[in-house]
Length: 284
Length: 197
Image (cartoon, rainbow over all chains, first blue to last red; front, side, top):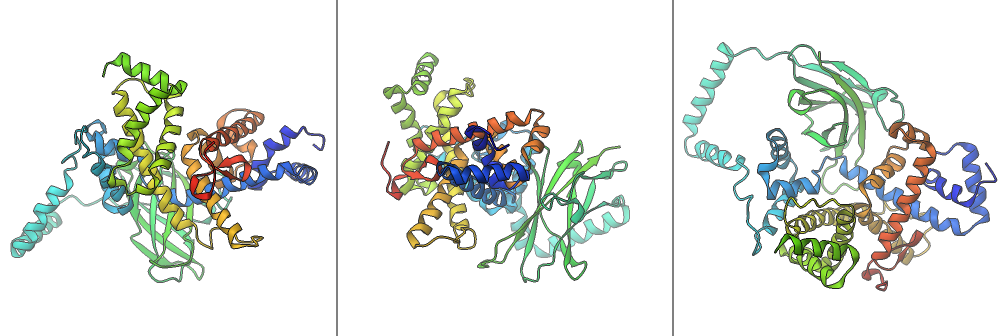
């Protein structure tokens, strides 16, 4: 190990900075660093790259839409397949940052020489406007209609199937290094509703919320949702409950990564944490 | 504009022919100077980042002529502008005392330089080949060893180490198209006092 060529040492430096080298290789790198000050410059590069990559990971774990997808949605929504379009619309409703980016892309299209193809492409706002007007101007009619709908659903509607429950605990966390194999969950029959209970360290900070992003095997976000409830599970651990329609977000099942991002109250000087879990859905 | 003319511009841009570079840069500038982005002070940085991306995309045959070249260039400029806005937001969020280690930083100037380096590495991450970005994520965010990455990618450990090393070379080359120096030979923009190469 000690008589490596300088190039070999250079190739080990990123892994040295990441702290993933074996002891003998780490010793060889440290010896080379002591003998060759020029290598310190390379280490500085890798430290910069490492810090930026980790910081970026924390940001992206919140599941923001890729910029090229936002642009495609604004420019040519008709080229996006229906299922993905639904996901994108839903994401824009809950992610104010992506919504702002999307609006800026739309605004930039209003330049001379560019056809605003995306005008009126998203159908959601029209329906919402109509419903808002109904609720505002005809509250009694709205309340009666809602009551009738609920009564009909209770009496004649099909009973909702029991959701499957997936527990993601410390043993299935990826970043802790504890997980070697993902938790496997076998879906039964046509059940598509999944309730995920994820364990995170107890947060005593009032106003803290959590957001779940599910990513597919290609690390593309397929679902983003806010936590439904937070229950203390023990003195040190909280249990978060998320509800996911896996029939929509992962119709074929497969390996998924769940990233739970902590959302701190505005003005907090603490650093928000993220927790990652892996699991596999198996269709019958 | 004829397809033939577009092919000429594309070839000329990748080869660095001034008149064709000027045409493409003009298309990029038309998009990124729009007030919707709120990047009035960073238009030249944004033009530079878009051109670096376009050189990689067009040089690798990514443009297949399914739209006009101008439409393609405008689209890349738009998503680069979105990425740039996100970079700026991240910088504001991440450049806090908690996230930039201040150990062994003797002066405020050094601290400023460290923060500036962090900001530029973040920008650089947008510009390197996505395969490099993915490798860096495996190394620095997921803390995989080179042997684990090799097993995951189905190649030898040596191949992974060489790929990672080539990524650094690519990043340094991209950095040289930006301006001024930060650690490891990457360069930064005019605001930190550098010179145009």
